[in-house]
Length: 130
Image 1: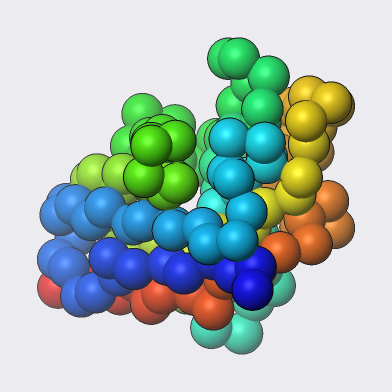
Image 2: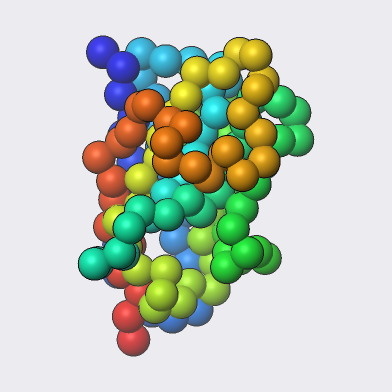
């Protein structure tokens, strides 16, 4: 069974940090582009960061520049989203998603385009509040 499972969400004060994990089963993440998305209450899902299968291929939205970092551990078949200096506007359900891409074709803004991805996790809630 192919699935992604996120973890690491929680309640944090502004300025705090969280590390989200996305564990893949039934799929080798090293052959997949992986993206992190979030959905705030009453808003549409938006892409946050993505990492492609091409070496050095990554993309992030401007709002998280300098605060969020994405990484992979292929040995653990896990992708991570390190979030620092969190703000109340970062609140939402965070999802990871994957798309098989051994051809290294998904690049740039495609990495944060929800329509590119066909495998989704169930989400983990991040709440940033005083």
